[in-house]
Length: 211
Image (tube, rainbow, N blue to C red):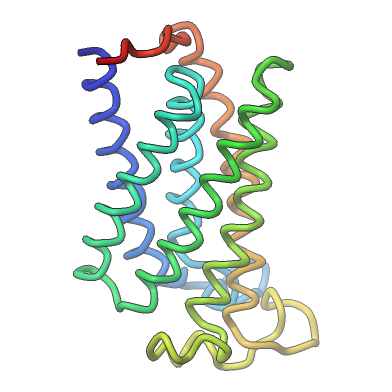
């Protein structure tokens, strides 16, 4: 029963994170910061999505990689299905692809480093997963190469100074990707705090009995 209860909780949390991120990634920040137009730099989805890595890492720590993959897969199916109702299809496809690949990489990296210092596995897993996730999501969601999937946000493909700062101009989604990754890295570092705080509560459990 503990396995089922915790698995359902993790699946629910993962679903909430994926759906919320798919909605929020469609909304750039507004206003300026140090003269930089935030709409050229970042979307709100960058602040919520790194929580998915925390959920995956806690599942992996408590139940191991096999159940962590099941939670990721369940979150993928439910989250992407709901995302087709809450965002445009191309965003849902991009999110699902990036989410699945990034989370599976996180599980693999975490599992290979889990016996080292407590912070190395979640940090390395989330950082590498974030890089791959960001590259996949923004290219599939907005790059012209993937236009066969469906229309994208015209605002995203307009040119703007990279990161809203440098003279070189590129499609706005590239600035979003760079800004998104920067925030993911920062939030990933912050996520070490709840991970460390929960380590003594969510201890590794023996394998679930087979039936």
